[in-house]
Image 1: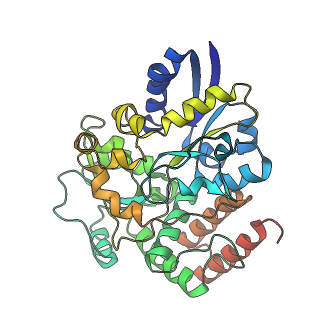
Image 2: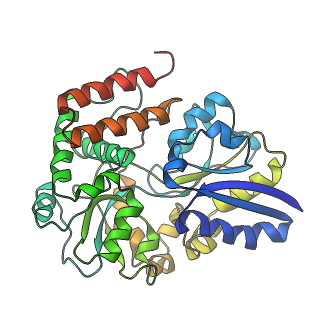
Length: 366
């Protein structure tokens, strides 16, 4: 029996399909996998190099690939003689391709979409003016903990036609950044102060338990909440207003370069990303697949009340975040700056100027 250790994130969407795959695919092949799950915030920020010394398989977010390329802690999967091409929604698979190599295979697709409590609204807001009008009713939420406040900022910049840079001398044009931050401050004034400590899971949990809170204009989609019986109330997901530029999320499966059982780990990773597993076992056990075979599947969509079809346009028009080595630390610091502006503890002009300064300082060789 070959024993592997894997690391993922602690939510049914993140852990349940991996446990099912370990039982149904790996174990019959003589591979035993022990999956550990980290809190969402730890998952987003913990040093990848350190994790790669302890785990054979790692579920990662695409901004980590710059660190992987610099440190050599992950296997370059395109060097194994296997086909790494995958038909995935939006830019999911290519987001793990960096400096000419494929550092992970996309297995989970997500971007900031809109969410509403099922049965609470007849129509989706299709403009930001409509979002503001709905927000005045006091029935809106938005995840604004530091990292997710930054994701909202990214989305609003790209939504306005000027995506933030991924490298270079500035993150965002001053006028574009100030306009997006003003827009975000306006949204923040219309939601409870508690949103400043909420991540997407917190928002969806609150919406599913409080009938007075019915809408979130920007929140990462979680198919779990779209399925019958997951929570007391079901959540419906749709495209964001003015569909363009949503900050891409999701995850990929990577193999540690330090694994002593590489062949087994690679076999597991490639099967997790296969079209058959994605539309079958992965989707049916609470996962949020990335493969178009699943997104187009009638059964998969029926199980989730068309979660995939109803958010497809947003995923296809998503924005891929910076991925250079050092970006993850920048993301943490930049999110805190955005929150300071939302709290009116820092002027919008000063926040945008400092974001640009930090962006340059964070990049290697600058």
